Image (cartoon, rainbow, N blue to C red; front, side, top):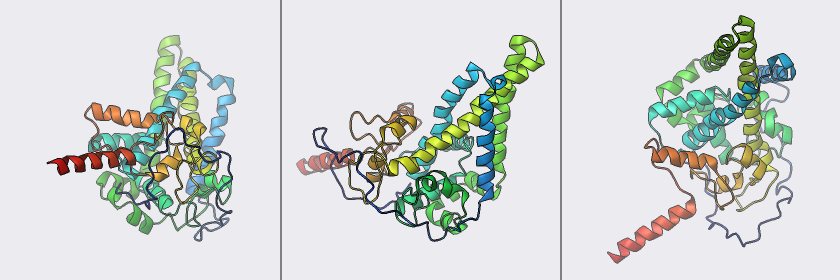
Amino acid sequence: MSENAPTSPTLEPLADTVELPNPTSPPRHDRLPLPDMVVPGRILWAYAIPIALLHALALLAFVPWFFSWTGVIVMLLGIHVFGQGITLCYHRLLTHRSFQVPRWLEHFFVIIALCCMEDTPAKWVATHRYHHNHSDEQPDPHSPLVTFLWGHIGWLIIQNPGVRSISVYQKYAPDILRDPFYMKLEKNPWLPGWIYLAHAALFFLAGLAIGWWQDGTAMAGVQFGASLLVWGVIVRTVVVWHITWSVNSITHLFGYRNYETGENSRNNWLVALLTVGEGWHNNHHEDPASASVQHRWWEIDITYYEIKLLEKLGLAWNVIPPKFKRRAMRNHQGHQEHEE
């Protein structure tokens, strides 16, 4: 995006020999109250029902009839492929505008993200930009300094007009709403749900066809299709949810800090592993415009590597490097101009 987040003090990347703050140091802020506009006890049923339903359906994974190793493998691959719809597309591409891709590819990534059932682009982007502007302050929609469960899931299922309103979307995601495809998703609230159901049906039908062809019976096809549906869609969706939510909750409570960023963001290696980079969250809050959150050699950022791969394929451009690299490039350019 045009970065809406406040700019933190400019710090050079820390050398590997510099002693970092204690990784187990307690949060720097006292517990926060709920955001002012939250209506305690008023359930947002449009979110609560799908969340509860998919968690309940995910329990079918414990029923042997729905198990297949192919389903498990599809689930594991899907966590990355569909999860990147959120990490690479919703977060780094749409929210922070850290790079650009052709519009057709951007829309394809958005469809992948919609298959995670994590809301429409305008709502997701507006909420995250709002979070950056008020991070770990009372207006923050999902600070875990309220409670861990609030930051992880509670904020999703309780009414908060302060962040879920047309005025907020227009203020924090006007660039998203200018795209006719994204506006159509906002004007047709059932469309994202139909996209999710359509992709679930494709998983089942593919399994049905393969199972029927391999074993020669319709029941074998139904069983194999059901295993792909349960593991490759439902379980995968729930896992991607909790992986995404852990960035809101865990990385604002547990981990180490490379930078004093004015809020409670932290780098957490476990979340970074699960989210292929997003867990280096303190690095991100220090430099939210950057396409990379890898500020040390061992802070591996697979998402950035994939963005660079897109760039090499000619499918991405204007990839924004980390702040210290941008500064070095400006200094080099200024030195060359001075010599001329």
